Length: 552
Ligand code: NOJ
Image (tube, rainbow, N blue to C red; front, side, top):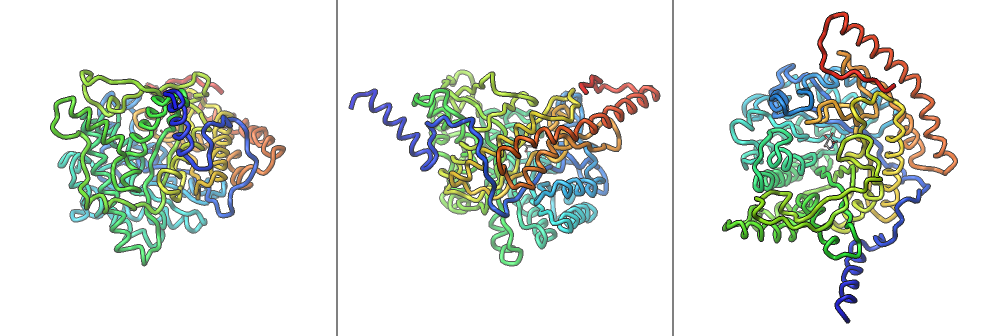
């Protein structure tokens, strides 16, 4: 066999072994599949505490790292904060009515750690008023037959733990987080059966401790993210064991983690270097967390690359921490279901980063990310709509981690700040195509049990403030009552839910038109309300920094 034949064969083998029944080489990227989901498939929408609750210092809540970070000038777009956000703390009953109207089967929300433990420590103070808020929320959801899926950590670490111990840089967080989780199991576990330990730990580690774009804003390049991730993985495992040993037999619930990952597609699927670069992209993203949790240790490619680069930089040990044999077996298998967040895709190719450029998580991967300029990007700068990437990611999870039970915990698209158009055609298209790719993946044998649209409401989009709106419902943040208005995608999603999928071409093709019919009246209502609040502000002589530039 000559070199070329060998090369072609090896790339073919890689394609074939990547999945048993999903043929990567078939470019079946655009066809639509009509069909429905299995009976009992769960449809939901999501939110998180800091992004929606507001009430940042109410009823005894302590400060979180996001309360502190958002107060620093220049960290958040327009220096906005989540202080009041959607006022979800006060309006949860209205919001549950919205969910009821959509006939959601589940609602995914997170518990704010400092709302129930103001200093972070269970031994110091339990805030019963915070517990009552979540009790009421859970009870009302259950009264309305909506299953709560609860995230324990959606990024809002108690500020005291950051100041005293350095947050996730410090291994003591493992025990503190375990105490907090144990308290939640104790108080809510008789009613909550789906627990997610961490939301998107990649983001906590990389944006919180490597680039500093997110709270706590540390820029510990090349080490901070790896250390934070190491402690987060240990904390996840400990909480899973706590549940397993102390609560599972009584409460009969499940504990998982929610990992977010883009799909990485080789620029040239016949080029071995591109195939390997794309593999690194996904291993450094999702594999970083999923491989220890499902298989017991970091992906080999991470150990190889970070180890080699650390050596070239003259370090005696790898910047990637090491799990002891006991830790590996303790961590392996600590996932009853995998929560999956997915939004977009990148093309990936090899790019060497010489060590002279300094160390960083990004340089460690030796790759470049590309996008196709033809991919639609209606909102966030990073979010291109590439539905076929979702099916590939789902199949990757199936083959890499032994076909785990999956709940899609986040999927959705944003629009730009100046857009006040509730007829969100592009979001309907996004949901239609992404949900359809998920259906195809299930036909491929991927074990998906539920889907969660991100997000129920427009909310505080972290460092982007209120400038990127992911909601099914539009929230008028300029009005202090924070009224909600349905976008057309509410109607569209409702139709997917009531049909449990995509029954037939004739019906599905009418959905967009029918959904659009209802949004023009909402558009008018919103436009009138905005004109009125504009008038009031001018009347009161308010200097508001919010740009006024309606596109209605
Ligand atoms: C993932 C995060 O978990 C969520 O909080 C955020 O709003 C979405 N991505 C969109 O960026």
